[in-house]
Amino acid sequence: MISIEIPMKWGAHINEQLEAIRSQTYQDYETIVAVPEYNNELKDILKQYDVKIRNCGPNLLDARFTAHSASRGEYSLLLDETRIPSTNLLYTLSGIKNDIAIIGEADFGNNFWIRMSNLDKMNLLECNSIDMSAGFVLPRFFETNILTSAFKKITNNIDDKKFRSVIFEDHQLISFEAVKLSDSISIIKDTLIYHYGDTSLISIIKKYHRYGKSHVVLKGTHYEFLLSPRKRIRKICHGDRIKLTIFYAARGIPFLTGYYLF
Image (cartoon, rainbow, N blue to C red; front, side, top):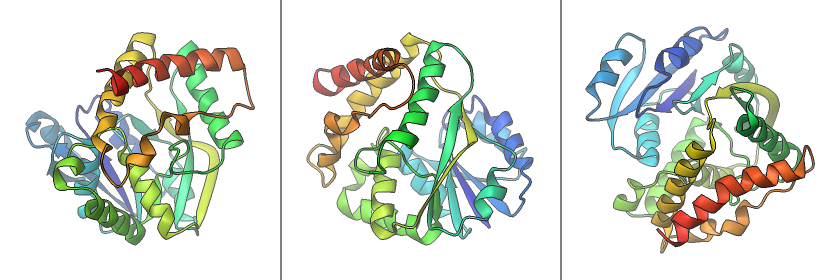
């Protein structure tokens, strides 16, 4: 069985996502959704589906841990509420023999920012090494015991208050600890997950400024070395370098402003 673990705060795409899960060609799975305690409206919608609902705090690492704690599957698939699985995603993952898998993704849409985001994803897979300390290319599929051990390592390395405060670095921390436990990694380059990403410059600026501000939560912890902005510099081997540089600046400048200034 595959456990699909989803932290959900707003539920903007809840029906589309859960219908896509329900339509999978591979049906041996369970879905666990972690929802902030106060969002009763979202919980009412979720009750229309065959999912486990768990209460969690408002931030992502805590929500992922809450969802995973209810998992019964041999493997765990980490999704976000903005990511929609293709019909054959679980079928493809069911044939994976490795402990961990990186899955090809693409953003919905076709404006400049979306095209650059998708080009960035291509460059990440084709041109950059697999390095969890850099946070470029992160897996979403894990053997469950490895994921459980990764969470245990994180809870041992940072205190409960900081653990419950992590927003931006959740996926990277999990992947960093998981890959230390196993280097048996598959890379699926086919696009099997679709994402509702940022479609405008203003939405990019707001999001990455918020990410920069939240980044400081790991200062003074065991994971502070992951915070270096230099780790996030990408190699480019496909597409228009100038356009991608504009795209990276649109993300990077507000991120650095949030991290260093306010």
